Image (cartoon, rainbow, N blue to C red; front, side):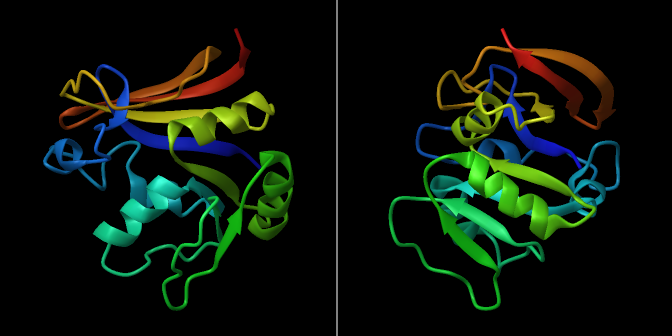
Length: 175
């Protein structure tokens, strides 16, 4: 079982604008059947974790809840749950949540959806195995950082998906 952080980023290392907007990303040219695309990735995922800002963005922008996997949402406030969604709220140390996710996922992998700080907490605990980044041909100048940690990584795979440079990295540990 592998724990992944799969996300998109601007070339200057931001996953969202300071206002949590992804408009810059959604207008990019990306082949959903191409290399390192989401549809093939999500088929290997048995459980996921996300922060409250990511969860709220998904609720506001997706038409319904699209995840069939159980999702752990890290939040200190009460948030709505879509009908039929298997959403579990968590706070505190990611180790306990990771153990519950592992049990729920069976033979499938885990996905830390976002944000970067949450992925960093998994990395701090030694629980983040891979980082998949689709770099969009845009710079934002500021915003939510891709991964606010100093990590040593090994490049495992690289591909071009239309306008995106896609990389998959193994996490070797903290620098």
